[in-house]
Length: 110
Image (tube, rainbow, N blue to C red; front, side, top):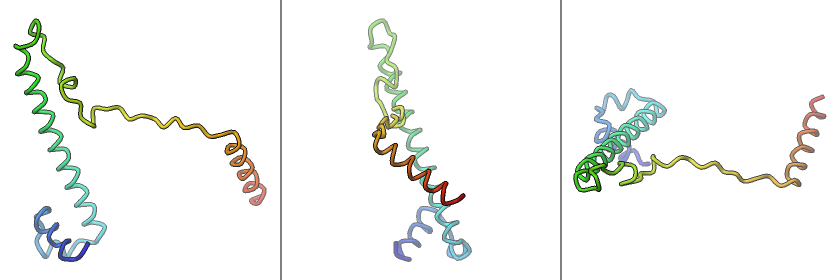
């Protein structure tokens, strides 16, 4: 990222003054930018959730028996999906190799 791009982000997105930018370390600026991105994602997510809830509510009178539609069944967002575990297994040969290496490291320490 060029310095001009950095200033553009600091002054535009983060609403910093030139004096504030000068006082920040690169780490502090990076942390501030990450916090801003997280806040933006949270606001976006809240807007999508609100839209989904509104759509679900508006569909209620038009469903059988007026029972409505669950919002999560209407639209499924990425954050609704449960993370899947990687169930990749280690082969017996790889496990044996790791155990042998561990024994060699222990013997060198002793």
